[in-house]
Amino acid sequence: MADLLSWGRYPYRPQQSHAVFWEMEVPQTLQNIIETAQNTLAYGLGRSYGDSCLAVSNHVVMTQGMDRVLAVDWQTGIILVQAGLSFAAIIEMALPRGWFLPVTPGTKFVTVGGAVANDVHGKNHHVMGTFGQHVRRLFVYRSDEGIVECSRQTRPDLFAATIGGLGLSGIIVAVEFQLRAVETSDIDQTSIRFGGLAEFFDLSESHDQTHEYTVAWVDCLATGSEAGRGHFIAGNHAKRSATSAQNELLLASSKKLKMPFDPPFSLVNSLSLRMFNTLYYHRQQQKIINSRVSYDPFFYPLDGIQQWNRMYGRAGFQQYQCVIPQSAGRDTIAAIMQEIAKSGTGSFLAVLKQCGQMTSPGLLSFPLHGVSLALDFPQIEQKNIQLFSRLDSLVHEVGGRLYPAKDAHMSAVHFQQAYPQWEQIEALRDPKLLSQFWQRVTQ
Ligand SMILES: Cc1cc2nc3c(=O)[nH]c(=O)nc-3n(C[C@H](O)[C@H](O)[C@H](O)COP(=O)(O)OP(=O)(O)OC[C@H]3O[C@@H](n4cnc5c(N)ncnc54)[C@H](O)[C@@H]3O)c2cc1C
Image (cartoon, rainbow, N blue to C red; front, side):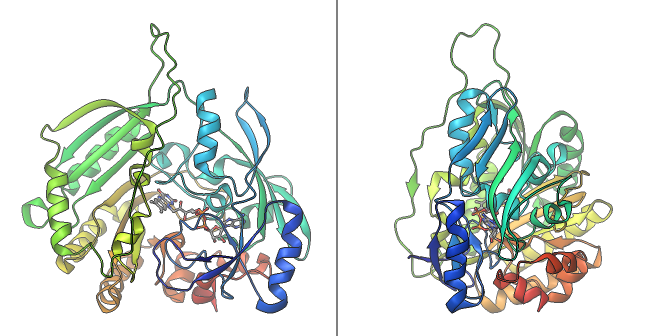
């Protein structure tokens, strides 16, 4: 048994872990927990930032050991895996065979079950939608029904409540989904330095037509004529060169740095942020750089430093991720950035992404057609409460919403307004499963 936290390490509520390795162990493990603790929740790799992966009882079912491939067809790319298998493990197996994940978040250290429960999105949302759109079948254990198979045709209610369902509709034991074919393990990348938000929106509009992956980093502390400056990054899977006889499906090296200890205070403060953001902005001298890069630094730049979340010190940090509907995107993102710059706090990387129009099969899926902004804040209680409340007003005024996977502060009123389908999830919630997030926003 090890104590577990969420990625932001805030709120600080250590979870006792109860590991499962096979589907048939899930009922007994759940039963054992319930005898003393009333409720529980599945826990994957703990890459959710706030309290959505924390059980109210502080006892979780750890799924990482359920990590086997159950069936795979390398001709079609259809794969059936246990829900605790990580994206990192899938890449290791699939990429050398010419397959990649259809959608991936900014870390490969997530489980397939966690990716379904948060219906994760990535840099290709405008083309591929969310991960849930590529799921064909789910096998879900419910304490009142046993293992249930669900899909768009069979038990569509449970399917819709499980994709993006925050782990509340049951414990996902297996997932069948469609991989996407690639010719090489590289990305043809274009990196463009931009001077302000208006330029970001123009770049998104043009590059979303031609590139599968687009995202931007913005300097959240820049003000005046430099406000909204950043780097826009677009990419496509590189094609195999007709003349090369070399293997172009190569796994990236697994060498990593590690944050070796918990500093007593946050290493992220307004001084270090300002220095880092300025240096990062100016590291690219030319306006545009085209290059061919490996998939790993392109998709997972933060995975290079293990446990980077510790640099925020023992108090931890919160991520603020919102999505603003398209019609209000330009003005509201500008207003949010202005509030953040005024506050003098924020993260090394504020990430802006234009989300597409595809709708997910999941009831509580986060992305809307519009613009998403994500950034981290060191946990400083009073400062965050005041800033988040100003940001929340701006988001909700225009019909935007926050991402539950990243959240540790959203009010019940804001959640219920932004996700009116929440009552359908509550109706299908397994009575033995309850997260701290769900209790906070619904009860
Ligand atoms: C560096 C970084 C970058 C990220 N970038 C993105 C991004 O670009 N896009 C994005 O969408 N997200 C992003 N995330 C968030 C991350 O992708 C999600 O939080 C993901 O769900 C984490 O998966 P996990 O396996 O760690 O699940 P956990 O965090 O352990 O759990 C997440 C939820 O899934 C549920 N769950 C887990 N396993 C199961 C199961 N077997 N059955 C039922 N429920 C289950 C849990 O109960 C919980 O509600 C990022 C996170 C990090 C740390």
